[in-house]
Length: 267
Image 1: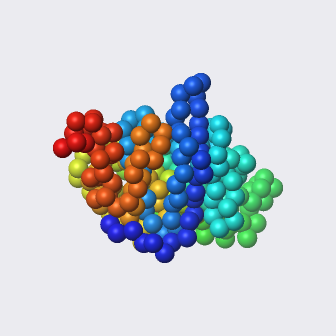
Image 2: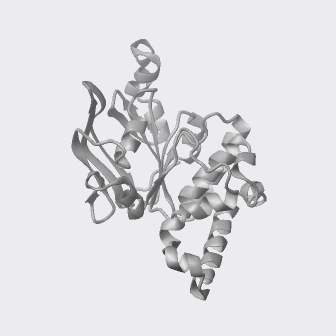
């Protein structure tokens, strides 16, 4: 997909470095993610992709550098993780983080709790205004589930544990969308899926983007990256080695070398 050069920068890392006991997981990394785009990060295992996501959400402290978010250029490394979510970032993980015994609908409502939480006493007394708020939250949650066609909304009252693997992945994405983020981070959203399931998730991500969401994703599946990404970053050894369209990055000598070795890059 072609990149749109008019989008404002929503996320920027500046000289970002993370050192784990002498191992440079992220090394002097500078990049910019544009609002309104789907941006993909690719790279071999161990290239620093998930570490970068963990730094963005401040699950790790950076060794040096900055991560700036939004027009106000707030440094996310100055904020605890829960306040980063409140700033408008939401993410999925490589491993599923659902509440398996809650229903599909309840899982989405939990993700919305920071926007609808009324406190202990109103929750106990249930005044009319809170009942209206709860009905509104449920309607919004159902609307979010409807983005994924009948796959999730038809199971909205069933426990999350009853979903197929692919639909549990979709539910994780739905929870991100429901938290009203300005930027959604997806960590390998089609990991473990077959080609048919992957095509379905490509359509889901495109639909979410069409609703106005900015997406930054990590993915090894090149069919998904080619199908959805406006812009691609390639990482290797914690550094950005290429940036551009999928075609530009996938044919870049440094990227070919990172995946296949120096001999392949020379041919």
